[in-house]
Image 1 (cartoon, one colour):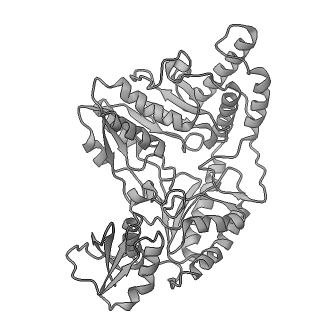
Image 2 (image 1 turned 60 degrees about the vertical axis):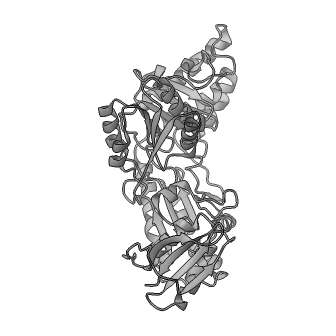
Image 3 (image 1 turned 180 degrees about the vertical axis):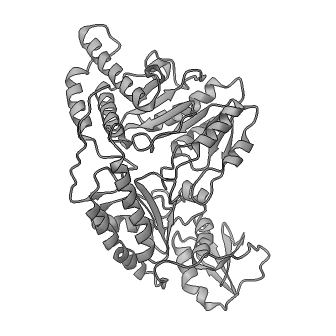
Amino acid sequence: MLGTMPRRINVACVSYFDAASAEPLHPAARAAFLSAMDEGWADPARLYHDGRRAGVLLDAARETVASVLGVRPDEVSFTGSGTQAAQLALLGTLGGRRRVGAHAVVSAVEHSSVLHAAELHEAKGGEVTRTPVDRTGRVDVEALAAALRPDTAAVAAQSANHEVGTLQPLSEVAERCAAAGIPLVVDAAQSVGRVAVPDGWSVLAASAHKWGGPAGVGLLVVRKGTRYVSPLPYDEREARRVPGFVNVPAIVAAAVALGAVATGDDTENRRLSALVDKIRTRVPETVPDVEVVGDPVHRLPHIVTFSCLYVDGEALLHALDRAGFAVSSGSSCTSSTLTPSHVLAAMGVLTQGNIRVSLPQGTPDAEVDRFLAVLPGIVADLRAVTGVPSAAPGGHAAAEGVHDEAAGEPDLVLDTLGRRCPIPVIELAKHIGEVPEGGVVAVLSDDEAARLDVPAWCEMTGNTYLGERPGGPGGVAYLVRRA
């Protein structure tokens, strides 16, 4: 194995809380990359001196990665990114099993790279079943098992969710796949270097910049005995799975970083998990009308996600950035997409004003305390312009109403057609007090996020969601009974 160095992180004036997107470059990776730039620049497939030297470095990196993952070195291939690895993992497994059939099973909360690969498979004539998750984002194992068929060529299930941190029941999924003789493809991008990935998988994908390696290095691991045919043109490199000249210096740096984070004790994970617990507890105590999502126990140690009612997600991101916090969002209320997060949508939770906090290794406790101190004021300032009265911190009890699409004519109709999240819910909250208890409000909206956020608002506020009806050209009427 390649040598490792102690972990040390320099914290800038801005608190970086987006490690789920990219962990800061590990100091050991930086040193290894600079060294390998001098020693490993040549083509590792060549037999002259510089090529052999690069080949030795590449072999050492492969052995380090294999040792951490508990696999054989010849099962490990390096790709140009985690996205490429995830897509090759699914498509290559389906290609290797084309004689069995063209049916694939994926969970509804897979990373978009996997879902896009599944869409490509469908476009080429394949069939894909997307299985549901519960409100914590946990895959429904029974539904997944029921979706398996004699012509199922592959199952894709992530090890942990990238948006909410929920650990998936991978061992149970692997047992069902093994019993049916179907290979399990695992996107382990958020897990590798953080927590152990349960065994039983056939093909695994991961991404170096998630564990402190450089961007531009992905892992594709294909276990012996798994039929795999690359969907890309033939190339002799990387066991014929990934074509092209590999970036040896970046691969060496990635392997060194993985060795460094994987060989340490669990102290840092426990510390980060305690900080996440603090966020999960304190945010709903200090910020009214907020929903913390994801499994509170079976989760990654560094990720916590919550959603704030009546807040534009993009505005919240910018306000936190101005306060010195770099966070991310799966919210529908961002100008880049104007569509709900597919993960939050599949979970059936609130999508507006969504924030994902993911703590890099070495995050100071004081920075988390500062975040918790400034967040209530930022949310309050953003809500002040909406005119919606907030509840007391801690929110409301959940509604226990019955879904009733046979409700009569509404007492009040709110026309929010043409207006985007979070406006439909803001208008609902502002005007529901104008109808008597038991009265019905219809919210007209053509924003897809309203289909998720109106029921979630009812769940949070104790009102009853009655279902939906056609609501004018291109719109839907969402019916709510006042508690």
